[in-house]
Image 1 (cartoon, rainbow over the protein chains, first blue to last red):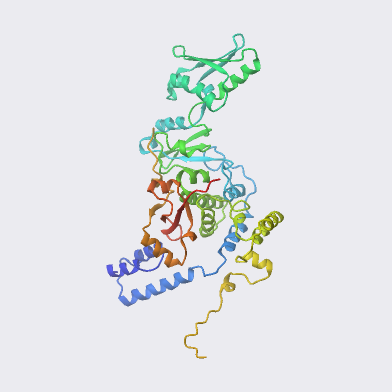
Image 2 (cartoon, rainbow over the protein chains, first blue to last red):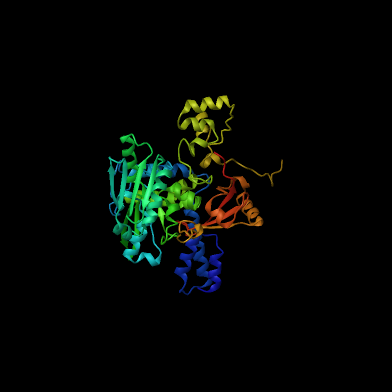
Length: 390
Length: 83
């Protein structure tokens, strides 16, 4: 093959991968121009055959192709999906969750990749994990309730603080601030002692024991290190590098932690991905999550069907669910919407708003008994009387 | 803090490019469509902000397609509707 032929391939109206494959196969072969043209013609006609035909009902085909194997999926799973002790929803519930475009998946999780300086050293990977994993105050020392003086005493353990790379005065500053900000509990005074590495909390209302215990509860559970939403982090070695798997997801804050690779870290929370990385990343996330959920159950669905669904969900610039509050609920036609769910409400609202149904879609035409605009039903006879003499 | 986030460098984000006016006209002519028939993308989408797109621009997106290897898609930048 010579460079002329290569250019000829590039100029063809074929998908990128087909062109690359063709070039790769032909690269060291001796071809006459005639043979080359013959090959091109055959490739081209095969490609034409493989394309979907105009007016084909791709949506229905996709629905069937995902729906039928879906019936064979596990109804409920409590799997520990391969990844160390982290529980991830799988099977049908997960697929429904993806299609419903929930704001929060029932088990949000992240795979945090690390930059080169951190990824190959267990201790440094652990350091990053401490910056991410939410750690309540009681992990850093002993908390006692002094009933006599109506106080909550925190004796910090210096060794633990040093090991987890957080300074004592940082804790002294964050603990009261976080109780006020995140836990919305303000009725207390605080005194920190840097020398004795201790904190003393005193409730404003010194008469009530209930108040004291409430304060103690807040003190015990206030998050002083890490990101609030991330409950647990597991460090795992995969292919030579350390990867952090988390329970809980917060892409935005994790991206700010030092050592985190902001180009590979991912979450299973699709709407979060769409918010932080954009709608196109959201589309990719839907495809990936749906495909891996199906494949994990040993179900092979062609990616084209899932791509179609993902495209529909991301058409308008944000992730929309498939259903009453999304794609099906925003159809133009009243009859089509009424045929889906909550029939009476739609008809009533349409009557009040004086809506007109143009009968352009499939469902409404089936309802009124007209030919539908799909397949052969969409083709009208057009005759151009050029040579016709009347 | 850590390395700053560059949305466009993330492996899940495909290439986004702002199209010129001539290119947009060609695109609409090839598919016989109007501008409003294109899929949308919000003006405050992180990827649009990163390339400096404005309302009314058409964005060309070069996706790593699982079927075609590489595929182009187009989106019209619109204002995010108020809830």
